Length: 386
Image (cartoon, rainbow, N blue to C red; front, side, top):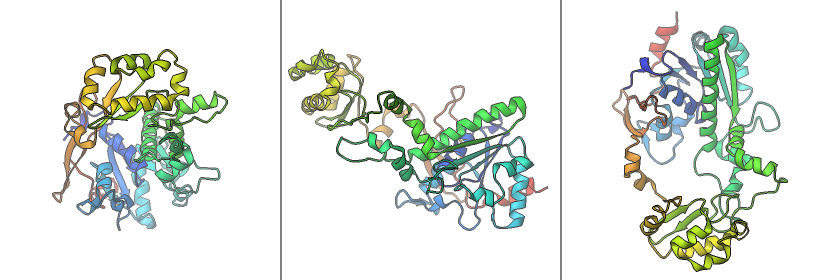
């Protein structure tokens, strides 16, 4: 288990009042960098994501999702409707460095734990709020859920082939990005606090994070007469990029090919049918579907390995498309050392990933799994209830 005394955020205490994914992802990143994270949960069931199953597998009574995103944290069981529990929580917040919450707008105010209220008892606290769609406007009270945020963000119209209809990204990108953006804001606020002693209120939302994810393409749209991008009708991979950009089926798998001059690709894979397009870059977009269909027919004739043996030595940007089993068994993955096994006091253990960031060449890791509901309540009360 890592020595937190030598970590970048050693000595910082984070009170995480969030649940589900966005806030807990943020606090997980802070924990990996050395902060102490105290997760506030209802004593009678805890974070609702304990029961949010991605499959029919649970570990020790909790979902794998909960384990993945709450490893290493301490659990404090607090009844937010109990005045005595609220009084203790305020005492805890008075000594904390960071607080994170992702309640629906209005809830935290009713609890008397909004930024202004917490700032009054701890002026230097860095307080973070994550919402679905911002804290004002017509969408503010709509459910802040990942699929719904994707639906409102426009991002679904970048995926899939033209005519297919909107295609969601197959994981919780809004939650993960909002958590990462919040972490970025918290770290910046902590730097300022270190210089001036002044706290801050960091705010973002699922929607804002998805808008930012699309900044490159939205900038093109805003400065291109607001023309809508047109997805390729055949093996679309980016609405704005020309052929050959895409994924092609080979005899034994799939080959991804990124930005490559058509003439160069024609010479390497031996495809005379590309001759009308080889020296006309404009046609690589205007005839994108036709060109990709021609390429697909040729790629399908041989194995992925065959094409890699030709394209990679020629410095063509390409890759085999790996499934998880191929990824996990690859040398490229193994050298990153991204997996770990964490354990809990009831002898529950779970395999999961590690922090994606290395500090001075070392990737943070710890041996503690996600906590039981209220597992650390007594110890935390003994420490702070003075």
